[in-house]
Amino acid sequence: MKIVAITGSIGCGKTTLSEQVKSLGFVVYDADGWVRRLYNKKSFIKVVAEAFPNVKNGEGIDKRKLRNEVFDNPQKLKKLEALIHPFLKENLRSIIRKNACREGIAFIDAALLYEQGWDRYCDAVIVADVDYEIQKKRVMLRDKISAEDFEKINRVQMSNQQKKLMADVVVDTNKPINVLRAEMAEIVNELGC
Image 1 (spheres, helix red, strand yellow):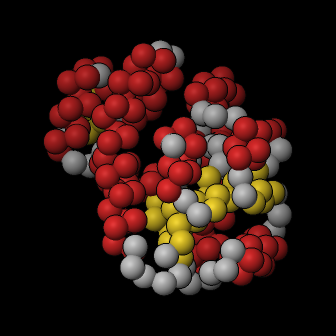
Image 2: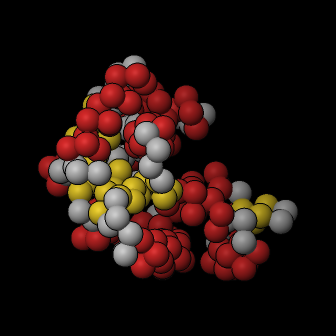
């Protein structure tokens, strides 16, 4: 079984590429989805609320407050990552174990692939890329945030320029969906999937 990762900085089109791979009939494991499910677990909510008391919101966590708190403070960001990353790594290991004896390919959609060192588990890495101004506009519209908030988020991630240098394949996502789908089909074929 080959493991192929799809990554890219926020707003660069990683999810769009993953959707095109799914439309080709492949399974894509979504690390962001794992995190969303984690935030619904009462045990995790309790741990986060203890570490960040100002972000508790009724029965859950106010993610906007949490984001503002950690992106303004590198030590707090590391503290949050220390709570989340072990869970994510265990999920990744579980996927690798489950798929080890199978033929074909498993795709992993992971924004922080390089930051977490997961690229060492992958046979290939595809990086989604787009012009910086388009990236910024996408995130501001999608997440309804200011340019300042976008900069905070973008600043804590490895730059897309660095990710592109480490990638096996770089895909410019500023194209119509049908063009991206055809491009991803060609890439998947070239990877021997």
